[in-house]
Image 1 (cartoon, rainbow, N blue to C red):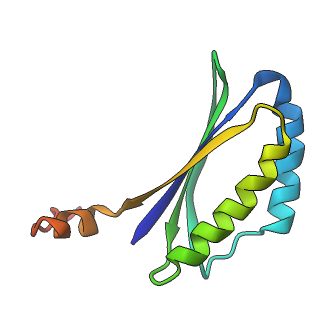
Image 2 (cartoon, rainbow, N blue to C red; image 1 turned 135 degrees about the horizontal axis):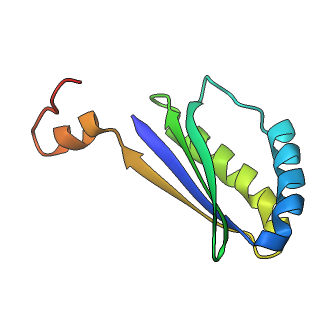
Length: 107
């Protein structure tokens, strides 16, 4: 399965505006568990601003839909001056090990 990871950086002084924007985004793009499942959403302050990390596990066959949805939702945040983000995709450990012909140990 594919995992989408989003990293965002919000300038300190724009945090209230970004928080309001997040409420708008969630309203327009409510969670759709038929496409993906949120694994975590975490935030920490840094010298550069607030850093937010989020990860979503994408359902098999829903990769394109999940990426389009994530891009559309994240683009709304660009209305907040100084907001920056990146979207990356990862394979699960099972799929990644399979690429090299190995099977990961059982948990």
